[in-house]
Amino acid sequence: MTPITLLTGFLGSGKTTLLSRLLKSNDFRDTAVIINEFGDVSLDHDLVDSADETIVTLSNGCLCCQVSSDLASTLSELNRRRSAGEITFKRVMIETSGLADPVPLLHALGTDHVIAMDFTLAGVVTVVDAVAGKMTLERYGEARRQVALADVLLMSKVDLEEARREETTEILATINPAATVADACHWDGSAASALIASGVKATMPRMFGRRHSQRFSTVTLLRERPLPALAVPLLLEGLAAHLGDRLLRLKGLIALEEIADRPMVVHAVQHMVHKPEWLDAWPSPDRRSRIVLIGHDILPDWPGLLLDAIEDEVRDAAAASIDRKAAYPKAG
Ligand SMILES: Nc1nc2c(ncn2[C@@H]2O[C@H](COP(=O)(O)OP(=O)(O)OP(=O)(O)O)[C@@H](O)[C@H]2O)c(=O)[nH]1
View 1 (cartoon, rainbow, N blue to C red):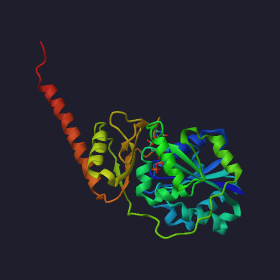
View 2 (view 1 turned 135 degrees about the horizontal axis):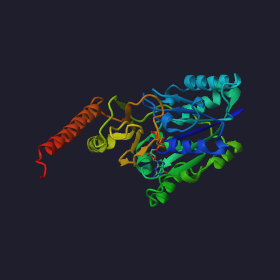
View 3 (view 1 turned 90 degrees about the vertical axis):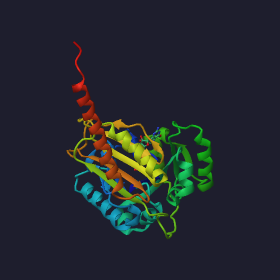
View 4 (view 1 turned 90 degrees about the horizontal axis):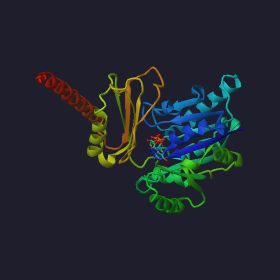
């Protein structure tokens, strides 16, 4: 039987960051990964630095809404490829979308006979963002269910605001007192392997009604032409100022005019914009900038129009500055 670990946690809590780190450890070699993203353009696959052939992306929707068919067929296909000698793996990690309700996923893992023939649930790991955690848990039922069903709760971002640790620990204890709580940054490959080896089983939940407490939507911005660097902070500021609480998550892989060979990675989680990072190289031949926004009540065309306006303004300002320099009389 191949153990499956469910890695869950609300939007931007740090699932992909944890997964990337685990996959680099020796204990986690031979892991097949299924990544589910909410938007129709997937970025996490590009941000997890690991062997491509054992990573499967399920985008265009939330796994919990179409669970039994998609999950069973993905796991069957991984199994078929392993039997055919095309890939090897000893365990499976499923990174759910940040909006996934784990209940139908756990139900499918426990009851689907196709899955049950070869796979067994080894535990649920839920990442909780210590900075945004309190507000998220108060507002979103999805986040509370992810915490309630965890075997292990991993707190991320305590390095950003250590003062939130106690408050978040108390809230987690009220929702799920039985779970082990640890810091995400200290949770390494051997701790994860120990969980899998111990065979911790999430209690099989009863299926219950409404999966998403609100209507969430995604907006994707795609741009063929690299963006001027100054457009990026202006876009992030503009989105934050106008969307406020309606913007839950933004992530992007951006081609900049000034640094063409290395894509910039931007993340924002609710009101917090994380420091941008640069990948060493483009992960695929697709060099378009792609920015995904997830939230509610976002007019679908508006972020694109804002980006166009900012891009025009930045280019006009750069052109005007060049004109001014040319018109300035040279000394001597
Ligand atoms: N300082 C700090 N930043 C973190 C930590 N964990 C994650 N981040 C940052 O938080 C942002 C979101 O992290 P991801 O790993 O992409 O979050 P995710 O849960 O996979 O996001 P979704 O897939 O959109 O739900 C990134 O900028 C990470 O670098 C942490 O423990 N400390």
